[in-house]
Amino acid sequence: MTDENSALSDYRTSGCLSMNQPSDQTFPRIPGVNSLKVHPVILITIISSLVLLGCSILRHELFQSNAFDLGIFDNGVYLISQGQKPFVAFRGIHIFGDHAAWILYPIALLYKIYPSVYWLLGIQAVALAGGAIPTWLLALKAGLKPDLAGAIAGIYLLYPLVFNVNLFDFHPEVIALPLLLGAVLMARLNQIPGFTVAIVLILGCKAVLALTVMALGFWLLWCENKRKAGIIAITSGLAWFLIATFVIIPHFSGAAPPAIGRYDILGNSVGEIITNLVLKPEIVLQQLFTLPNLEYVVLLIIPVIWGLSPRHFAPLIGAIPTLVLNLLSDSQQQKNLTQQYGLPILPFLLLGVISTLAAGRGWLRSPRKMIVWSLIAFLALAKYGYFWSRYLKHIDTVSATRAAISLVSTQGSVLTADQITSHLTHRSIVMLATLDTELQNLSQFKYILLNRSYPGWGSSPEFVSELIQELKSVPQFELLYQRDGVFLFVQQSRKGLGKSDLNMK
Image 1 (tube, rainbow, N blue to C red):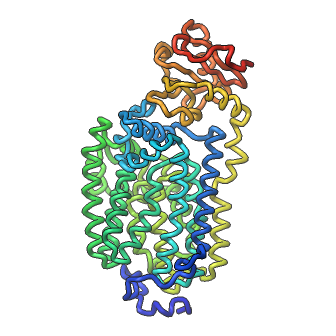
Image 2 (image 1 turned 90 degrees about the vertical axis):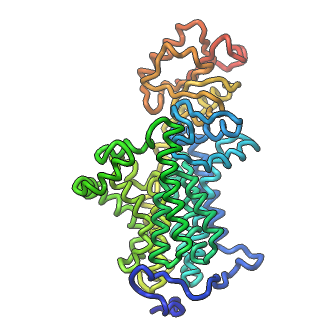
Image 3 (image 1 turned 120 degrees about the vertical axis):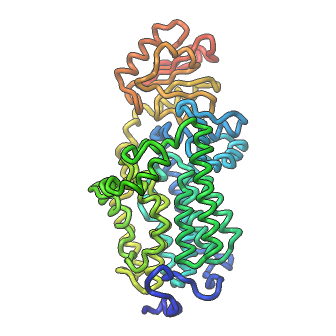
């Protein structure tokens, strides 16, 4: 056993109890934490938060944000903050009927201070980067030397999914990422109140996280010998899953959870899917063992494969629900490192790495080599290259689009393109100009803002051209702005500005 693990000679090296903690329930002394000097891990986390926030703001300002999902959550949170019913018109659903994410209600308090989509981007950046802190503390708690624990925090920050998810609009489940790690930390410290608070907040981020919480509970109960924490997680996760799935979501949406459609091969309802998982294993196996699924699993583990050992797979129990859901899904969106669906897997991968290192195992033992491996994985799998490729595809219309948005001077209803929606969601009604837009219903909108060159998701240049010609022929609509393929129309009876106020080209 190596020097840094000499204090862990009482650890078991196999089985579920491989991560039993030393007898005391306190942290080893953390250099810098109890002094005025800011620890490098904390400093790097702060810098990472700012980098992530800067990247997401730049993406948004380049009109690369989407109605699905930044526009959905910004519109819903804004309406909550205004005391209005948070019915997202272009989504056609009450925000609570989507994923029962009640965490959006306290977030709305920030919108009362000042309504801005940047609150969501800031929360996401802080949450994603902030997971490095509990990761670092968990490594220290496991007995790893400070330099090795700091490297584990760096590995977390360099995991490609963390960077990529930050660029994929906003999703409240990002808040659960540091909370899952914090919940494990609280459980290992026997801090049941703190653990309970973390679990409650996790459940409020997305209904399906109840399955992750239950799996976390099973692991804590049988593999970590944390009876109280395990029972709390299992019972609360099960209760919230039943309440959210069978009561809250159907009540607010009038239908089953939206994601059910991704599992058509298994059934058309939650109950039918659960039944078929048990009674029709041949369908499950057929859906699981595919080349896209193999590729997905490889992508998940390759950044940390050097620190995973079959003898220390017990923490991965917590990742099973998310992994199985992603593998069984018909949607390829759930099988990549660019979207949020794999986030609940990451904490348990890191716990597996920490367990392996604490037992003196792992392909790599040098912090420098670990960071180099993680950096190579980041360079290979992170989507930073989007900033000089796909994120610049609208650059020739950015200025005109921004000018047109500035002329939308009231909170009247808007019809616009997908990539513009999240810039105009602080109103009761905003809709997407897609191919199924009914031309005879255009009179319901005060403003219609279109981009003929980049019509957005669900549309086409031909459709937008047809729509523009239709609007020009309707007397009640007036063309207020036109430049670089960007057109802004307003109803004459509702307009607040005239042509003399505009810079027409």
